Image 1 (cartoon, rainbow, N blue to C red):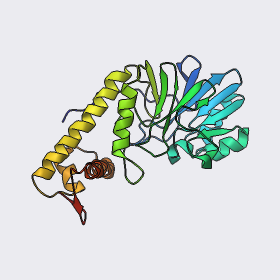
Image 2: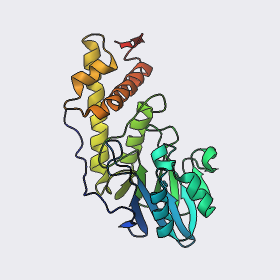
Image 3: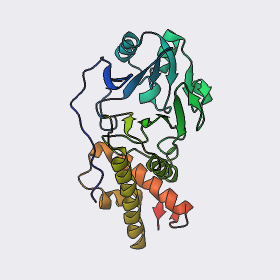
Image 4: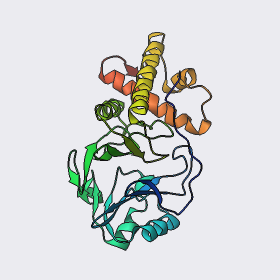
Length: 265
């Protein structure tokens, strides 16, 4: 099964705020890995009131120092979602700056819902990868965080991950006319429609392949991964099984699959 054509980039310079768009810079955290690519992207957004920091990144003193050195006055902190590689540095950054925090969860600060403005940006609720996932849009530019990444497809891992919601979010992105997506990991996406369309088509093809396997007999998520994922990095096997389970749960909700004692049919 062929998939989307993902993007690559050389390892970015560490600890430096690199321009990615007018008034927007990116610092890549030092947490590289198969799930994070070169690391989490922390974005610095210049405004008349100061800098807004989107996703402070992991709990790493060096990364925090780079954010503070490049930001000047921090006017606010935006969170795309509550995974630790995006919010680990939040307590220290909030304590150092006193800046208000905006997220889908009131536990992190001011609660922001779908369509709510934060300065010049508008929150877009995009659950699926995480139930509290937000993108932030201004004109034809969107911080797509982990909803649409440039180096890989997103992990959708139950119970927090929801495949039906994730695919609905991809359709929502396709209904927009964006020019630039700035993801949570990887380089900027300058052809959003092509990549988002390919991501959705890949999910639909994966789901069809799972249905075909179920029609051929009883299956477990591990057996489905073995049948459908070729040359899989062993470090990604658990994520692949979680993604398959998310598809199976979606199919069950739609009446297209049943499960008994971990075996699906």
